[in-house]
Length: 448
Image 1 (spheres, rainbow, N blue to C red):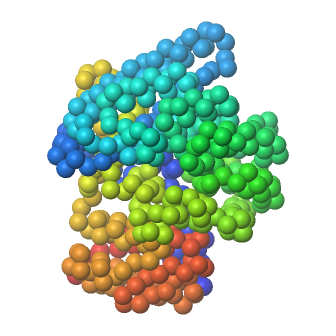
Image 2 (image 1 turned 180 degrees about the horizontal axis):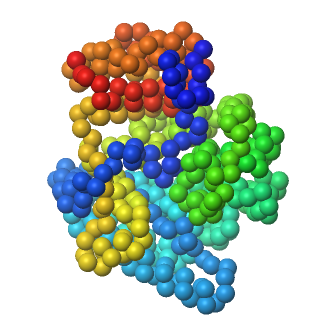
């Protein structure tokens, strides 16, 4: 059977332990400085001409939340927050004037933790004045919150702003962290937020779950996971602390280097699949587990699941536009990313210019690869003949280096392989990310 743990060699696959950055599922290693604001503006005008619906993402800095420090610190922080919101509103205006008033916002995500509710209300008011948000809870509008700065009242006020999906962060911040201990030994803080979400009518609740810290053991992780399962969230996003989501990096700091052994990490990942599968959760890839009645599970069953720079979505037909530091926009074949330097971001907007600093245009060969990986990940099967017809190629020759690995996976019972189909079998679903990544190997090969 193929070794899915060690470094690649002959007939060996590298498992993706966890996921890509949860705030960015795009392949940013291909991004370069040759893409700028003019490229994004042209793409935005093309989106307006086609009148395509929109998916918006607003990225907030991790410190854009109520402070528990001294009055002087609070005043300084308040000034920084105000400056950021002013630039963010300016960026929204600069982008919004290139899009059409009739383009519906079908999906919206507010990332970066829980800001003060007054800031959320201000931001949503500005966005709704500029964009066509849907009424009557018709859109999928999500927000990330954390246990430190969210209570029942906040959950209710966020629901009033139209949010109907919520993601709760439960990071392990350190072996001596009282909050870390409370997160899994006393589930009351998480239970309270989940109860609030149910009471206020949120459509789904996601819980973030990290593994791989040096002070974690397979037993402690199993206990924490079992505790969270009893709370019955709709989704769990599991991630490796070697690649933490952006919103956790300021909390983790240098401790990100203090990781457990590879054997313990592999054991935790195995525990995750065993416990969540036994509890009825489905793994759809990229660290995302969902209940069978979740919207993403329904989308997968109906062949409507897509994957973009935000991860899995049922709104893959939308043009994706990002605002804020490090935010990514994805329109047709163009990816464009804002600077992650706060001062540079602010200076650019003070000059009346967008903060786009890099990106990537997906060329023909990459489009084939992305289509294959997306359909295999989302549908758990691939119609080879459909790919050959669409792109005018011979699949087995085009992905010549991947084919022997696929044959080995077939012999191991992880996939079903023929000249017409690739189907990921139940035994192979935990490895769906690694199986899809096999098609990365053919980049740069001579094409037939």
